[in-house]
Length: 97
Image 1 (spheres, helix red, strand yellow):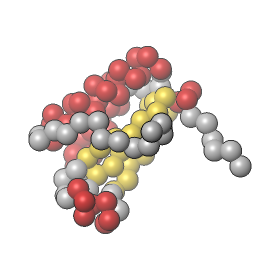
Image 2: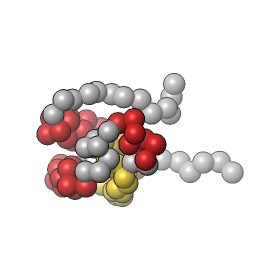
Image 3: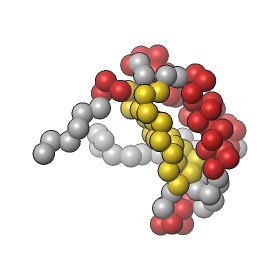
């Protein structure tokens, strides 16, 4: 359903996962321009920081935020998960009031 979060891919290796995230973000960036990015992790700030550096080296970001998974989400993923959500800057519209 449009607008719902969904799993795009699962990788068994953190480095491969980070590379895939960066490649997907770069594809969107090349088509749509600068991105707003949200990075998240489950007790793995080092890999999250590494992912942030990798992204910023290859795509222009207007805003890059980092968040730790909530305990409920972490209980479902386990420690060591890193992920990202990104949206082209020109596609974001504030919610109607």
